[in-house]
Image (cartoon, rainbow, N blue to C red; front, side, top):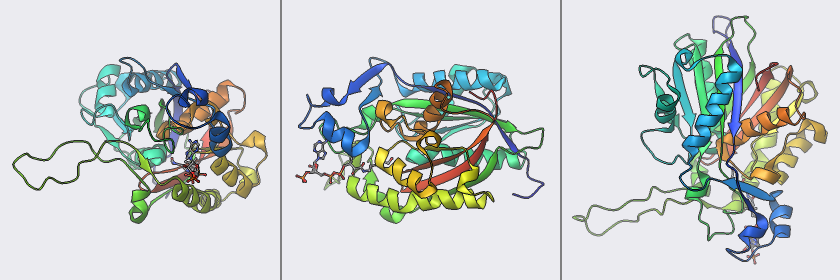
Length: 337
Ligand code: UT7
């Protein structure tokens, strides 16, 4: 970005996961599978899901409150809300508008959702960076909150082993000290291979029209093997190139905080960057794939558990339905979570 573009500061990060745990052993009650099969293939032991009347809105609200608190900003300071939700509990009002209302953010600012599936956080960060960069908005709340368990086909052992619910939030603002926390950010998509993961909207045809067309079931459908191949061939190289576009070498970056989709995919990126285990943040074992929320959950929890030292740098990366993918090299300042 040119020097006339305003720099961005990551001011606060928060996350929230529901308390209900579903273990691999629990899943054996639904279909023929085993803890050993799931853990070996994915690195997942358990995932969290919403229960009762709880939805991703509750998770997103909690994550947003934590991010705001860490940032030192108040709801009235937020001048734009962007939510990266690909499995929101309702299509509209959007997650962003709902959280705007529930947090008491003024009703005269823009709030909207974007759908970039598991790459949503990276996409939202880039949109926020553009807005802040050209000075339209100063302080933006980014959300990533999904109800994956509501669109999971719990009869499909190829997908329902993977996903969990969770939320993350980030407050980003103009960096008044001139230090940009985004050292590089790249994002991509290829709709030609979009059918590798799809969720059709459920619904009905107009009863006056014949013949009736195909109506989706609203559930996640995935060609797991091809998604896996796509991820391991595309993402590690892309992450390395993103680091290079920041003018850095892999060893200059302190941490890899990847989207948590499969432990073997995380290891493929780790191996490309030649990182030791201490530099790679993985919590997929306990949460599965929480889509766009997985990066802020891994980051926030990593700091709490002492795995991530703030005042450092990290490369984030996401990939998922679309197909979409993206990476960002970011500065993690003291006190952000
Ligand atoms: O955010 C991005 C989202 N998605 C991903 O990153 C997913 C990437 N893909 C994957 O992680 C893997 O493809 C899976 C973990 C989903 C599946 O692993 P796989 O090694 O690709 O298995 P597969 O689908 O090729 O199935 C191999 C065998 C099949 O049996 P047959 O046909 O060889 O007899 C499946 O029916 O394993 C069977 N199988 C299972 N067995 C026990 C599939 N799922 C299960 C299961 N438990 N849960």
